[in-house]
Amino acid sequence: FAFGRRISGELRHILYCWRLLGTLRLLIVSGGGQLDDYWGGPMGHPYVLLKWTILARITGVPVIFLSVGVDRLEHRMSRFFIRIALRLAAYRSYRDAGSKTLLADMTFTRADRVTPDLAFSFDPGFPRTFPDFVGPKDPLRVGVSPMAYMLKGNWPRENDDVFHPYFESLVGLTTELLRLGHEVTLFATADADNVVTAMLFDKIRAILSVNQSSKIRRIQVRTLRDLLPEMARLDFVVASRLHGVILPHVCCLPVLAISYDRKVTSHMHTVGLDRNCIVIH
Image (cartoon, helix red, strand yellow):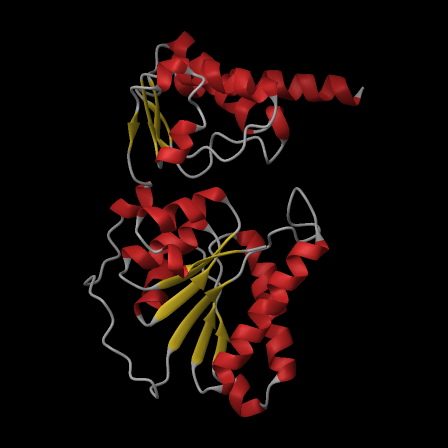
């Protein structure tokens, strides 16, 4: 009975997609790791992309894969679905050379372009200049953006032996910054990470004195426009998610990247900042 309900729901969704595509002139697939089966396996992103591209071909709507990333395609079925979806597209480009290399067995992709992540084209709305030089004794304004990597209940694969050392390292770093008189702003660039910012905020306030605790703040942002004014007041950022690293760079802020994935390490290498990149493990 439950299987029948899922089939019925999927058929209704296919009909909805077909009707929606009938109102469109172009379908653009963009964003981060779209070519990925880490979240949901073959029936996650790979199947969804296959469904949309086949329906778009039937309705005569061109499909563009624009600066997409390849994270993990671990299942044969995932690669089969993605192969068909990409072949049906009118245009394809990838956000980094590593993503394109991971598709090397799909020979029709070899002439495709590598173009930067779309976040690089974003205008922050304020002058993009490097921060003024900060003297060794001047207080810094530091942004810390943790993530829920391997946290139970917030990640498809859970591992306390990975998350807890990462979390405790952030506690140690943030506590030391506050003890030295610096200011810290905690923020997240994905909803799932708000859990970790809250955990970090509560633990640090329990450790430090009232005076030191007054120099840490936690902000919750809903949109990019909410986040950018906060970034404008920072001196540097510590982050793990790809766009938590890219957006400060767009704003000309130095970043310490705690990389959890190839895409973060690849970005830091491409911009020549390998020395500012630490692998999360």
